[in-house]
Structures are given as C-alpha cells and as structure tokens.
Image (cartoon, rainbow, N blue to C red; front, side):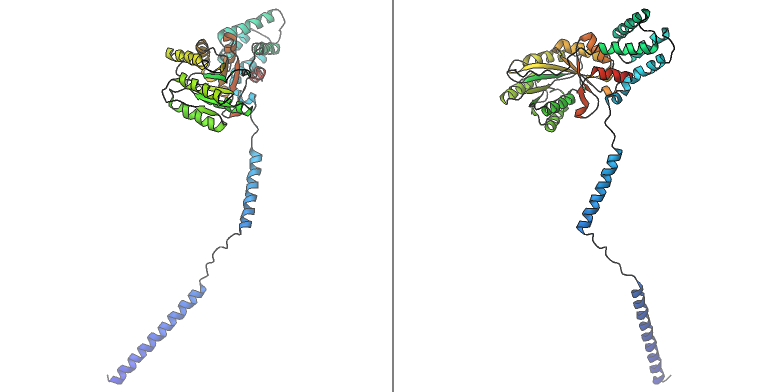
Length: 370
C-alpha cells in the first residue's frame, strides 16, 4: 500500500472520531436540558409563621378546653372508702325487712371500713334498741339512722388550726408522725396555705435523721416563699427547732412549722426525743399552739395505735389524715375522734396544695353513703 492510501485512511478515521465526539456532546446537552431544575423552598415570611403559630395555639387551647376534666368532688375522691359500706347498704336496702342477716352485714361492713370493734358495736346496739322500740321499722329508715348516728359522733368538734395572735413570739406548730405518712409534704402544704392567708412562715427542719427530709423541706420553702432553718445531718433536732424559733422571733415571723423525726413509733428513743423537742420548743420566745399528728389513712387501725403513743409523748392537738382518697379504711376517723378525743383537722385527698383540706364530717359521712 503506498503512502497516499495510508494518508487517506488516517484522514477518514480522524473524521469519524470527530463526528462521534460531536454527536456525544450534542446528546449530553439535550439530556442536561431535559433534567428539571431543583428549586430551593421559599422561606415563609415571619408574619405568616407567627400567624400559623397563633392558629395552632388556638386549636390546642380549644382541644384542651374540650377535654379538660372538672375537679373531682370529695365524694368522687372517697370512692374507695365508700366501697367498704356501699355493698352492705345496697344489700340491706334490697330486703323487705330487718333481720339477723341485716345486722351481720352492717357489722362486717363497719369493720372492713376500720371503724373499730367498739364503735361498730356501739352504733349497732343503739340502732337495735330503736328497732325494738319500733322507732325504726324499715331498711331505709335503718340506713338513714346509721348515717345520722355516725354524723353525730363527729360534728361537735373544733377543727380550726389554733393560731394565737397575742403570743409574745411566733406560734409554733409541731408536725409529728412516722416516716412515710406524708409529714414533711403536709408541712409544706400547710406553709403554702398559711402564707396565702397573709402570715409569715419559717420552717424548722427538725428531722435530721432522714437524709432527704431537709432537701424536701427546702424545696417546699422555695415553692411557698417560707424561710427555713436547717441543721447538720444527724444533729440534735431540738437545737434546730430552738434555733428556728429564735430566728423567727428576731425576724417577727408569725408562725414556725417544725418538722420532726419519724422512725417507727415503737422506738422508745423516738418518743423520748419528741418529748424533748416539745419542751425545748417552748424554752425561748413563742408558744406551741398546735401539735399535728400526721397519719396515713391506709394504715387503718395501726393509725389508732400511733395516735395513742404520739399523744402521750407530745400532747397531740389534732390529726392530719393523709391519703384518704386512696384508702378503703376511712373509718379510722371515728376511732381516733371517739376513742382518743382528738379532732381530725385536715385530710389529704390528692397531691396538690389544694388537696389538703379542712375535714368536713358531714361531707365525709355523706360521701360514704351516697
């Protein structure tokens, strides 16, 4: 093959490569034009965002308004306590007359409610006497009479928290009770309620044996706006309370709420410690005007034993009955007031400050039957 032929072949190959390259470029450009452009989302104007937020908030508020439940009544909160009596009451009312089974059912119901043997017998004996005298002839009259007798045992008692305005120094309210009864929490709630009434309050953290007690009380002091005096962990409770009273006196504070140790009431050393606390609290300025025993309602008759021992040691003036909303043993109220003569002044029906309320005996008995 001569040189002119080879030159012609190379020229043709070069032309073919050039044509192929131009074709590839053209096709790529067409594909590129066919791909859609990705656009960035346009930012929402602040005014529009704010308006949307208002609409969402309004919708949430509307939903909240629809689903918000009404506060529970005392009757609703005492459903468990009522359960101890409701079955027997319904059974008695379902009969046409009053017979031996009637008395057995009522006795069992009263004992289940932790009214106590003595009080249950006393209530039923009084009713039996009236039945024999033909004063009561129907089951409905019997239940109404039982309700009346139970109310009568509770109504004639002063349940006000005792605050003496003419005391030279602060009023002192001691809080006593076993660990776990709700003593420190009740103290915090009482502090908040007293401050709401316009009184100045100082808390004395006298439970130096329980590590968390001081911190718990400090939290309540911050929430309520009360002052607080604390001592060293494991220190002398009487000294802490004495210092608290002196501090309150120097600051013209109206009320000292003193927390105390609460180990098991069978511990003799605890009772001696509480006697000492009571004595020391009144050595300086001020006066002990309340000793409130805090009892967990779910403990039932054991609460009566607690009341006996704490009263002997500290001269208890009133009872704070906590967790009554979660107990089927509300009858302990009758045992405490009838056998010991100590008024139940406050009852706990929930977790919030407003759930610690003044005990209303009429409302309580009504809630047990209705």
